[in-house]
Amino acid sequence: MCAKEVREQDLAEMSSILQSKVVTEVTKQVQALLTSLETTTLDIAITGDSGAGKSTFINALRGLSDEDVGAAKTGVTETTFEPTLYQHPKIPTVRLWDLPGIGTPSFQADQYLEQVGFEKYDFFIILASERFRENNAYLARSIKAMNKNFYFVRTKIDLDIRACQRNKNFNEERIIDQIRTGCIRSLEAVGVEAPKVFLLSSFELHKYDFNKLHNTLVQELNGQKRHVLLLSLPNNTAEVIQHKKDSLKRHVWKKALMTCIVSVLPTQSVNCNIPMLMETLTSYQKNFGLDDESLRMLAQSCNIPVLELKKTITSTMGKDLSANHVHALLNEAAGCSSMVASLVASHVPLLSHVVSGGVSFVAAYSLLNSALDDLAQDAERLLKKACGIEEVEVTSYDTEFFYFD
Image (tube, rainbow, N blue to C red; front, side, top):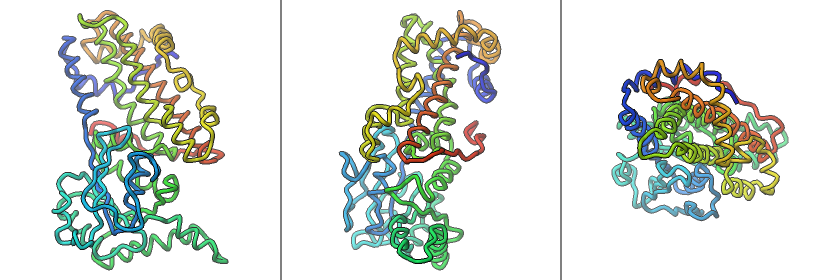
């Protein structure tokens, strides 16, 4: 594993932010950037008619089944009587709010937003399991008037498909188009302009319009909120996995620089960068659902033995994440990074004033980037196994929106 290059976007971002030659000053700058990233909150409001499947949808987004510990309570009647917070089990700064159904006796439409604490939410997802009604449209118009985003999700689409399969001339694509067109027309009829409607199944989140919803949210969120949203999404499509990898790569230079400069601080040992790298790599494993707990839950949900799932994990980082192995890879990367190190040091003044600073940075940078590539490939193979897919296709997309926002 040799370090061949540092991405131009990363060099430009480092050069624009880090001009000090003082170790402690740069350390504080980079740590502040990482702390801001790790503490950024995202509050998502899930609302809609009673019985639309709000709680099940929240559980699906959190990677849980309705029976798992900590899952949102579900039922055939309204089970939510006040805004209820559910933190994401892996990204606790992502908070999903199960809001009471609009139009119930306790939550009339004209007072609904004030009652549920409108201000705290970053955006709203409005659910319906049949057609969207006047209350949904009223809510959407009110949200728009307050300059926040909302998205319509038509749930339980799998039940509609299953019911129509008995028809002699069944065509799934045609049925989906008919349902989507019906939803859009019903919303336009009650005054919603150009409504964004997504058809989903909370039990088959990888199918139907989940990718469209995910792409829309990613494009319409900014900066760090976009990043934490991506990390929170379940790894149930190849496109999510690729978006997640690219978002994590944007912040690799911060992690690599911290591991480089912290080892030269007076209070730190020379080898303190290994535990820091181990912590980062362990978090990457969890982000891609490759840790033991994630594999156990996946095995339970898709009824495939854990050992069978583990066979799809072929990367060294996925199979053997140990301090000794990380140390060996770091030394290997350092042995062939001197040319790239000179380029980096020319952009970051501090590194030219720290012994082997450029080489140390490039080695860590290379290791983390390679690990992300390998772990993402593991996650795609795991997805293929879990879903019984012969080939996982990745839709191309523009990655420019990940930079400088």
